[in-house]
Amino acid sequence: MNQIQQIREEAIQAIESSQSLEEIKKVHVDFFAKKGKITSLMSQMRNLSPEERPVFGQQVNELKNELQQAYDAKLEVLNQAAMDQKLASEKIDLTLPGIDFSFGHVHPLMIVQREIEQIFMEMGYDVLEGDEVELDLYNFERANIPKDHPARDMQDTFYITDELLLRTHTTAIQMRALEANNGEIPIRVICPGKVYRKDDDDATHSHQFNQIEGLVVGHGVTLSDLKGTLELLAKRMFGQNRHIRFRPSYFQFTEPSVEVDVSCHMCDGEGCSVCKDTGYIEILGAGMVHPAVLEMAGFEDKTITGFAFGVGLERVAMLKYGIEDIRSFYTNDARFLKQFERFE
Ligand code: DAH
Image (tube, rainbow, N blue to C red; front, side):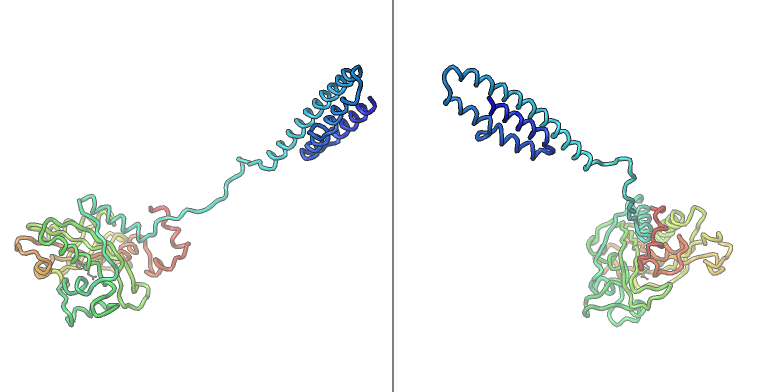
């Protein structure tokens, strides 16, 4: 009986002083487990007389129940404390403002490119791209610019081999489109892409820039179709009050060829520094596809005609947004680029 009392005190003391789940688990091992003190009390029963046994057994059972209750209660308290601590340490404060980060946005040149593509797609054109590394064949020869022709000097070219070069204009894509159609009409394509020229970079020149080529081929396509199309482009890009004018020009791959001017969007044609007091701004080259070009691409039917044009994207973007230095497009100054967030 003394022993029972002693174990009771020991166990109560151990349970009460337990401060953590580890400590209370140790109490379980020391008292309740197979080799624990309560279990060993039970095994002493066989040393007692048959009269003593029931009394002793009952006492041990009572002790066991009492301690089990104390143990369970303490375990619950400690479990709760552990959970509270875990929750406190993992607490997420949803009212805190999130970490701010900035989204990227579309580059100004891409804004202009997409805008032009959109205008032409609405009129049923397809968008067609080509390779920046191009064959001399498509960049020059099919464009009616044979080897050794002086017109090649107009575009100072980066050659890779005698036959391979960095395309100098998107007209190379036009030549591929013509060949791919192999005499079939209609063709209505718009071809954006990077082009390269051996120019010294300055505020208005860049050795790499972007063009968009337009090409329409069909029966009886005329110069007035070209004019109507480009007038629409000018109005959509620079405002409904714009009109255009054609000036005679020369390109090997078009006949006749024209230089296209848009009435100045800054002064409405009155004359200002942007249009150099002329009231007009030159924006692109165009013309009727040269019969020799159509023939080389496999168009035999002489009633099939076409118009083409080539626009410099940088030039359009510079005019539209009042950008003064072409290099701004390529130098990745975030302060410059950020201004175009609102135009997307
Ligand atoms: N390829 C010419 C250039 O880069 C631009 C051009 C002019 C394209 C007239 C055309 C065109 O399609 O018809 O200067």
